[in-house]
Length: 279
Image (cartoon, rainbow, N blue to C red; front, top):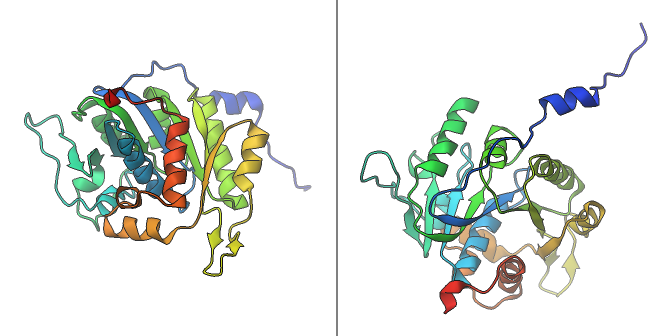
């Protein structure tokens, strides 16, 4: 028997693909929602999300961060939080305050080494708790650190929450860019505004001043041009970013004037206006 290729018809793909017909709802206590996505793990998405949140705070905005990675929450480690959120009415959670951010994560409610062996419905239930039962206090921006991939959690946010803009994180590596492209397509399918792409780990500068392109060169720049999406910036391999995440001391909180901190701050300035709290 001759081998035959199997292809899904466009009609079938359209039928099973996520749409955007549902009414998207805001999150109480939040003016604008910025979603940080990668569609692939290991590209530094959570590290960038935390440091973008700190940068927004430095621009005098009131900022919160929601760690929506149910299976691999990293906010407790990256912000050095071991407390559990409180609830005055047994229903609504009060965000934990750290470094001037309002913070929430499933990691605050389970032991650090607990494996979250949850199926889709339980994940969606947890997400809906975080979007409807957290008492965010008059935030200008809520930064949501989305889980990698394009599964149930990401779809729930994209289809049901009124996201003001998504930022896609990728390394220059071709494999990472392929997944980032899939994530972009999903946002487009669900009518989520894409603010742009950040190329993380773009290069490494050795002690002799030479720049090394370990994961390839200008991959995100080429992809942004092909997809007609803004390249918000490139962030080099910076040991301070890694050390800060490991210690629970975010790089942007403690470094005020370096090439990397200025790049992160500059990215935030691209999609923000002067803070009303400046006056």
